[in-house]
Structures are given as C-alpha cells and as structure tokens.
Amino acid sequence: MKSAALHFAVLASLVTGCKRDCPPAPAPTESATSAARPAASPDKLPPGVNAVQNEMRLLHEAMRDTVSAIALDKLSTIPELLHGVHRARALTEHAVESGTYELPKNANQLEAFKALDESFHEELEKLLAAATANDPAATATAVGAVMGRCAGCHAQFRVTN
Ligand code: HEC
Image 1 (spheres, rainbow, N blue to C red):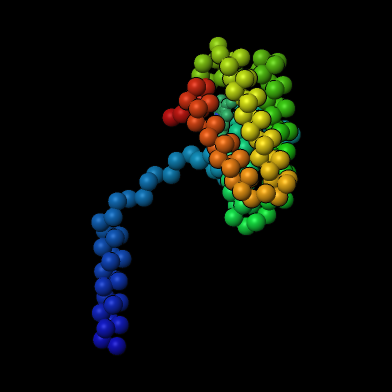
Image 2: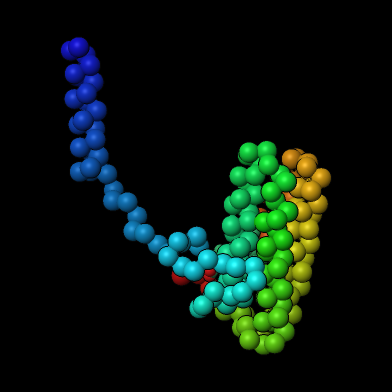
C-alpha cells in the first residue's frame, strides 16, 4: 500500500513536472493529409487545388495505405489505390499539355519534369505488378524504389516552406 502510494506520488510528480517543464508541443502545421482541406479526387480537381497537387495527395495517401496493406497482409487492396493515382495522373497530363499547369520551381524545365514523371510511374507499375502477384517481398522492394523518387523531384520542382 505504502509503496503503491509512493509510486502514485512519483507518477503524479512526473506528470505535473512534465506539464511544467516539457517543451511545448510543436505548433500545428499544414499537413498533406489535413482534414481541413478538400479531399483529393482521382477524377475531378477539388476547388483551389491544381492537378499535380491533387495527384500528389492521392499518391501520398496511396503509399501510406500501401504500407498498412503490407503490415496487415492485404496486398490485394493496393492495386485500387494505385489506379486512383493513375486516374489523377490523366488530369495532370491534361493540365500540363494544355498549359494550365505551371511548375512552382524550374518551370522552364518542363521536359525534364515529364521524363522524371514518366520513369516514376514506371516504378509505380512495378509496385502494381508485385502487389497483384501477391508477393510481399517484391512489394516492399518496389515501395522502397517508389519512395526513393519523391525527394529528388521535389528538390527540383517543388517549393516547400
Ligand atoms: C516527377 C516529380 C515528382 C515525383 C516523383 C513526386 N512528386 Fe510530389 N510533388 C511534385 C511537385 C512538382 C509538387 C508541387 C506541386 C504544386 O504545388 O504545384 C509536389 C507536391 C507534393 C505534395 C504536396 C501536395 C499539396 O497538396 O500541395 C505531396 C504530399 C507530394 N508531392 C508527395 C509525393 C510523394 C509521397 C512522392 C513519392 C512517393 C512524390 N510526391 C513524388 C513532383 C513530384
């Protein structure tokens, strides 16, 4: 009893101590998955969202859910996620070809962007094939290859604040 009380006191002091001394939680920042923003759609751009942003949001969600699918042994759910990205990509291509989309950075390097995008989508095709074959090891490897492409393209064409 005594030691339980002591334990409680120590815990309580830790909790209050933490309230007083711990660094404050980071201020909320705009997140790519923020619920406050309109949901990305494979078929129609939400208001105020350009085609690449829309595709990227779906891509982000698809990769996040792909990790969950691997964890939960549900590889069969991955193809539908990737098809959503693929459909959104058609909106991107239309926007790029019609000149309604302008890259936020290095806008004059459109051909380089298209080439990077093309080879990126080939990596997504490999992920699709591995998931369709229900091969967890190949799926995980393909996820690594896909994720290995995000930062390079962002460094070249995306503005982050
Ligand atoms: C071929 C180039 C390219 C690749 C590859 C790429 N991105 Fe992007 N991404 C962009 C560009 C360009 C933007 C900025 C779009 C804009 O603001 O117009 C962007 C923006 C984003 C955004 C912000 C979207 C928003 O709402 O503003 C997210 C999230 C994102 N990318 C996720 C990813 C992830 C995850 C990967 C890898 C799995 C990836 N991207 C791979 C080009 C790319």
